[in-house]
Image 1 (cartoon, chains in turn brown, red):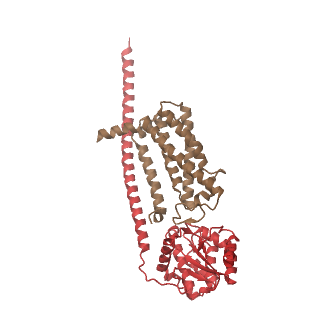
Image 2 (tube, chains in turn red, yellow):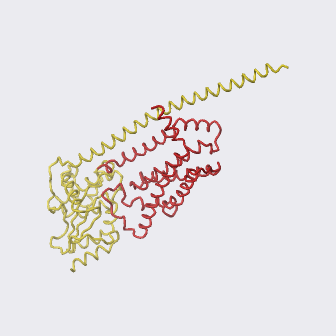
Image 3 (cartoon, chains in turn cyan, brown):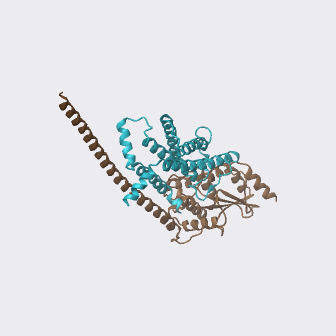
Length: 206
Length: 258
C-alpha cells in the first residue's frame, strides 16, 4: 500500500498529470462557457425564452441569466470564458508537448487566472445568496476554474515560477510535496458542496 | 601552516548548518503531517455533514407529502382544485396557476390587475385561481407558499368576494423569492386591508386547507402544468406576453367574440 501511495504521489507531481488535469478542466470550462454564451444570445433575442418559473425554482428560472451580475462588464460573463480558456488549453497542450515557458510568462498566467478565479467565486456567491438560484453550467465553471487554478498554482510552486521570498518558497514546496494542496482543495470543494446542499437540499432532493 | 584550526572551524560551521537545515526539515515534515491529519479529519467531517444534510432534505420532503390531516375543500372550489372568482355565466374562463412566492406570477399579476378586475366585474370573465405550493422550498423553511395559499383558500371558503383583493394585495407586497416571506401577522394585515373579516383571518393559522393545497398542487402538475404563471383561456394555454397589460385582455376579448 505504501508503495502504491508513493507511486501515486509520483504521478500526481508529474508534468503529464498536472497539465492533463489542467487541459481537461479548461476544456470543461470552455464547454460550459459556450453553452452559457448561446443561452445568453438566445435570451437576448427572445426574453420570454426562460421567463416562466420552472418546477425546480432553484435550478434555472432564468433568474441567473437575467440578473445584472450575469453581465457585469456589459456583456455576458461567459464570453470571458470563451476568450480565456483557449489560452489555458494552449498552455496545457504546449507544456504536455515539452514546451517550458519562461518564469515571467507562468507568473503572468498565475496573476490573470487568479483574477478569473476571484470573479468566478464572486459570481457563485451572488447566485447563491443574492439571486437565489443556481445554474448547473455556472457550477461546472466554478469547479473547473478551481481545478485549473490549483493545477497552475501547483506547477508554479513546483517549478519555482513565483517571485516569493525563499523561506516561503521552501515552505510551500514542502507543503505541496506533502500533498497539503490536494487536502486543501478537497476541503474547499466539499465545503462548497455542503453550502449548496444545506441551502438548496430541500429542492434538489425533493 | 596554521590551516588546521581554520579548516576545522569551517567544517564545524558547515556541519552545524547541515544539522540546522535537517532539524528545520524535520520540523516542517512534522508540521505537514499534523496538517495532513487535521485536513483528513476535516474532510471526513464534511463528508458526514453532506450525507446528513442530503438525507434530512430527502426525508423532509417525504414528510411534507403525507396528508396526515383531514382533507377539507373550500366552499365553491372546482373539482379540479380552483378557486372561482366572478360570474358563473361569464363567457370566458381564465385559469391561472400561480404560487405566491413566484416572482413572475407577481409580475403577471401586477401588470394585469386592473384589466382582470374590470373584466371580472363587467361579467366578461370568470377567473379560476390554482394556488400552488411548490415553491415552499424557497422560503427558508417558513412554507410561505402553503401559508399564503391556505389563507387565500380560507378567504374563498368564508368571504369569497374578498379573494381577488386579498390575492392582489399578496402580490403587491410580494417578498423576494428565497427570503423568509411575509410573517403570519403581515399576511393577516394584508387580509384585513383587503376587507376580510377578522374572525376569518383568525383561522388562517389553523392550516385547514393545507392537505387540499398539497393535492391540488400535485393534480396541477400531473395534468401537464410545467411552471407558473400558466394562464389558460377557455382551456387553451395563453402563449402571449403575460407581463404587460394588453395582450391578455385582447386574447380574452377574442375568446369572448368566438
